[in-house]
Amino acid sequence: MADTCLGPALSFPSSDSHSSIINALIPFPFFLSHHPTFSLSSSMATTTFKTNNAHRCHSSSASATTNSVSPQPQPSLLVFSGGTAFNGVVEELKQLTTRVAHVLPVSDDGGSTAEIVRVLGGPAVGDIRSRCLRLSDESTSEALAVRKLLGHRLPLDAQNAKFEWYDIVEGKHSLWTGVSKPYRETIRSFLAYFQDQILRRSDESFCFSNGSIGNFFFAGARIFFQSLDAAIFLFSRVSEIPHESLVLPVISTNDRLTLGCELWDGTIIRGQNEISHPANGYMDPVNKSNSLVPTLPSKIKRVFYISSEGSNLLHEVFPSVNPAVLEQLKSVDCIIFAMGSLFTSICPSLVLLGIGDIISSRSCPKVLLLNGTCDRETSGFTASCFVTAITDALNRTSGNPHKCLQNPPSRYINTIFVPKDGQIPIDTNCLADQGIFHVVTVESIHDSKAGVFFDPKSLIQSLSNLLLSDLKI
Picture 1: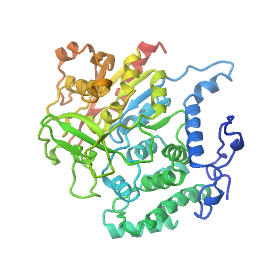
Picture 2: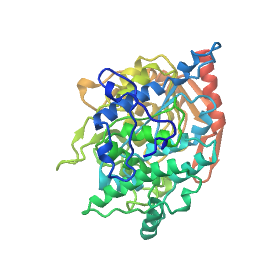
Picture 3: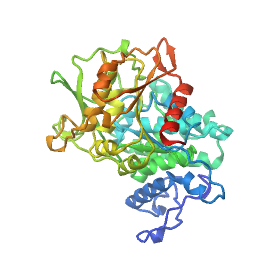
């Protein structure tokens, strides 16, 4: 097996407990029969990948100490977002800093993600894959080829999708053009492993319609390593994401997670897709346009996690937050609540125990990027309604009364960026009552289908100005 499958050999940091695996190489499952050569247990693989991620976060500052003249450190950010709305500014954000921890939910149950979870189980990886692709390298023709391959979606027609999938996994498809042998063998190995896992579920028929090749690669890696963190690390190496950029699942798990919500009229809705943009079929392309989905019978009171197993599918569960997220929250220079689906993309990361406690203790900029357009989840909302929803989620207001917080909104948000001429009313007096006085208007883009959204250059410039004034950088 080639040692160069991911460029430089992957090695693990030394520790007393893992001294036997110093500089160990990961033998990837090139022909599946190589599994016995895998030198690490699943738990050891998970531990070492997490340790490496922690080191990567500070790589730029560490390297600066080796120079006689230290460059000005980049500001560090943590962004709570989903897998779609914030993607539009990721490329521009690189011009300001690459020291960004992207915190993403793992409860998406729509599109091709839903089919993977239905047949193979595990957490949803669609949002994580989407952000990894946006962060991936574009500086060489091979990097672009890898990005195109992992970003490809199969046709909607199920039979055509299956035929194209076979061409890809067998290495015959034109998408492999420009991908060198080491990368080709690595990616194909995990796609083949994904295919092998599907075939082992003989009682389930997998539908490839509109399937994401990146999702298939991610799922294959996660199942092989039995670690979501390891799969993210591998994807990061294959797509050459900057080492100081982190993509963090808010919950690090190998189990399926289901999101639920309670409406103010008492109605319980199960599943992120049903809450945000219900569709008629599994593999329909996601369309969040407010005009194409029915309105909710009542406003959303809260979101929570529901058991995916057993007979009581409305039983509330309380998963633990990824410790890496808490560590990042303690040290970053700025915390951002990104635009996107408020209750299904942002709040699922905020309701977890520990998140609100740390955010409320920080004195750094805490910025809400307000949506430019209302959707099914936020119909009739004003700016202060968004603030209230985020505050309630972080305070865990509707959860266990013994674990609730009583923090005012200003402990969580001290700045709001709003897109110019956005459709959500800015109720300044109500915001002032919440203790929020710093509202910044940012240039926007108007689209007949997508509505109003931030101009990426203007948004990052406004963020840069904020950080310059707060951090004196």
